[in-house]
Amino acid sequence: MPVFKTIRNAARTAVIGLLCFSVSALAAGQNDFRMSATDSSITNPIATGEGLFSYCRSQPEEPISAIGFGVCLGFIEGIVKRDAMLPKELRQICLGESTEWGDEYQVVVNFLRDHPKNLHLPGRVLALSALSAAFPCVA
Image 1 (spheres, one colour):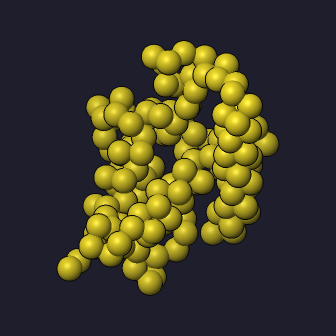
Image 2 (cartoon, one colour):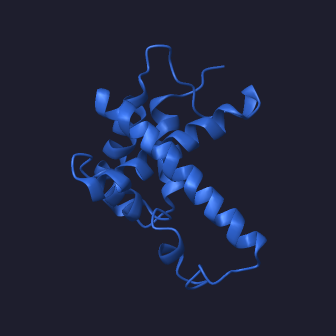
Image 3 (cartoon, one colour):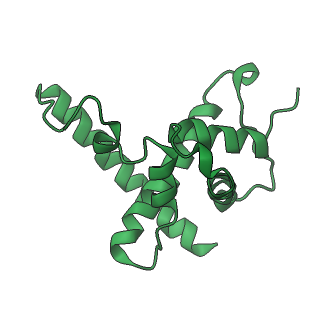
């Protein structure tokens, strides 16, 4: 899966850039990058499963779509890494030793595709549900 390794670097760069933008805007006291407090899809395009699914279906071969695809991969990697930082007894995702990086992406995309009625729910909830079901932690 060489495409995933290339896109992983782009995703990390995109996530770091977004974090830097958010921190600098908050530090400067500028909240105008938030268009509406009631419409989270404006400030966070992957806030819902629908938005996340849209980004994850982007084609990495097309330059503009590669950004969306990278955001999807970075989002999924962030959920996995956040879970790994929790104490062992609280973890919900336990990747096996044979798990490859692109496997997590496939699990989330398949889950979103197979549960279209849930796409209105938060993307992070759906991704965590997919990953914890596919990679459960056994006590």
